[in-house]
Length: 88
Figure: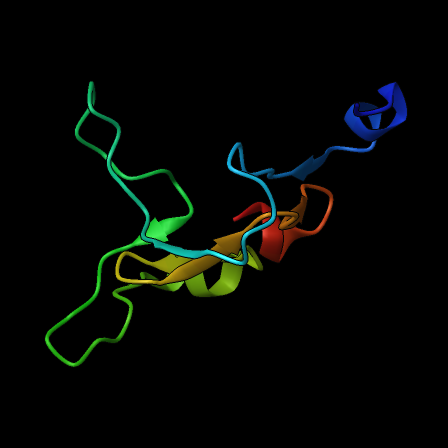
C-alpha cells in the first residue's frame, strides 16, 4: 500500500493489476474528450515531425512534448511531478 508521504511528494507509481509480467505499454498524449484540446504542455507537430512552437513557448523555459510522443510505461513506472520533464 502507498504511504501518505508518497502523495505529499507528488510521486505517481503505476501498478499493473495483472502482476509483474513484464508487459510494456506504449501511449501517446490524448485530447480531452470534453474540450477536444491537448493539455497545455503538448504541442502539435509539422510534416517533418518537429514541434510547432511560438517564440513565447521557446522563451518560457517550460517543458513541452510533441503530440506524437511515445511514452513507455510498465508495472512500477514512477513519475515525479516535482520534475518538470516528468510532469509534462
